[in-house]
Length: 143
Ligand code: NI
Image 1: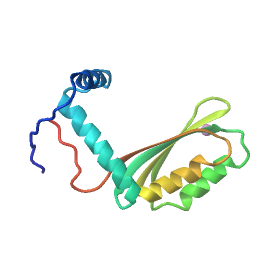
Image 2 (image 1 turned 180 degrees about the vertical axis):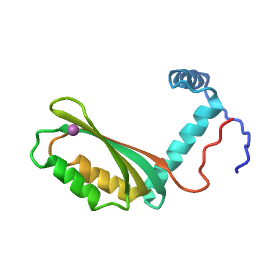
Image 3 (image 1 turned 60 degrees about the vertical axis):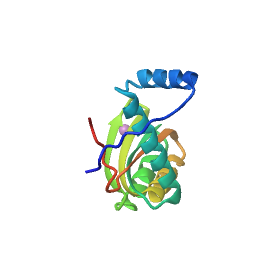
């Protein structure tokens, strides 16, 4: 378990005002919580670039149910990557639209790659990958 360390930050008052608005809008309880979240996001993002970090995430896809072979292609890519795909939830949104949420876990660069492959298929209307670090020692502390 990591120890909590305090440090002080100097910044312009107008920047702090904007930051407080950001905290309010994001419903963040304290400035500390917001700073922690931003630091974590930045470090996680940096680790993605190196590709070495263990990550977990969700890929949300909205797609055309009537597009020939799209559903088969989506399933095929997932079957080819069972080491990365943890689980899939499918919802039939309307007569034409499907929503699929794919839970992924593995090296960040591989998650990015499979997400690009799936998102790039013809007939996908919306694709959104959200990733979080799944590496040891980066657990969240609540206080
Ligand atoms: Ni469906």
